[in-house]
Image 1 (spheres, rainbow, N blue to C red):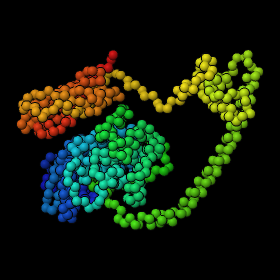
Image 2 (cartoon, rainbow, N blue to C red):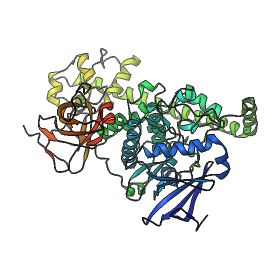
Image 3 (spheres, rainbow, N blue to C red):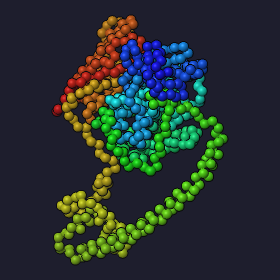
Image 4 (tube, rainbow, N blue to C red):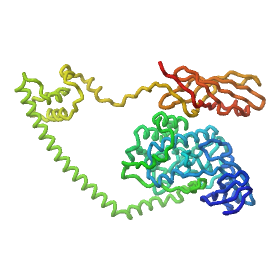
Length: 563
């Protein structure tokens, strides 16, 4: 195919292939730009279900116009061949980065996923569910832009199901439990797949892996997931918690939508906004020894070849035989591992016994010395040791060395750090039990958000929900309308617009076309911030049937929080 011309597209290179066809790089001789030509295998054009799926992908992509989604330019036929003309995305997919780096640092993963969730939110607003989110379907360009790829098995909400070759559509490792149970795809199932992808990027390991799809699906349905920070100690606990919420087995327990997932990341890590490729140069350390290699993918749409995996086990009766064979094959390995484990426990037992003996001897010595201080130096000033002993809140005293319990108490006293002043200790010889509990915080105290002036340097999107009912509105009239802010807007670590804040604007209804203007919104400090509607003109039925709108805050806006 190299050198051939398809309409006005001259093929220059073969980029990859998969189960559905080939991807070529081509030059648009009319416009002088590089494109990607995705061609369906000629033998598949004779099978209606594959041809319909190929055309459906083109129709889905035609509805999506977003900087974080690969764009389709055209759909053409030449002879018996069918082609999609798509945006040529130069860069690398995240699966290749994982193979190279094993795991990716949080300061790289968070901004990458903020972009991925932005594109996913756009698709969900169009009632389109991707159904195959995974590292190989996320492309990163050299300028740090993330692109969602391969909507080949995407599902449009409410559409009739296509006849499928396999019972399960998607990549099993990234499938939500409800999809395995046969339920329809939804925003929640895409959020789960995004959570699995983020989990693998951070830990270098998939939540579940198995030798058969049957066992893998059983694990997804029943087993608990080990948090990513337990596999990679460099993952912050707050980030691990965010990922684990996306991986809840109950769809209702996950994030309400992709925007909520994105906002959780932005609130927890306000400094991680831009993708810096140099962050990959820093080594990711502290891996668990239980980590498994990432499974390779083979997809069609990306230049690196993406193939959707949809096969399910073919003969469940072979599962038991496979397990037996693995046990016999690895019998020697299991015996060596068991022997090593027994030896390790033996060594640890010896060390532990020696440590206990030393601690007991030290406790007896300290008890004797403290008794001398109590009996012989009553009128003398307190020695330095007494400062450590004064916070003791145990009912037993140090003057009874024969018993084991006071000895243990003395040991705890000596291990306490000196975190209080002497004059405080002298006044509180016997502090109350309630005060002891206060010294052992159960959870960190949440910091109050710092109030500071905010100068906005980049465009910020504000998601709005229309409050005003337009059912009986007159045509060709400026109708005052109000909106409520769907999600809080955070910039530079400061909440500048609260959820539920009121925005105002006007709508002019026509018979066919409608104009919408969003004027301003109330900031958290009471200030009115100017807004601009992202889509200010469109068909009336589209504008009035959709109550969700997007506006932007323009760069140069200043929000003053001075009291």
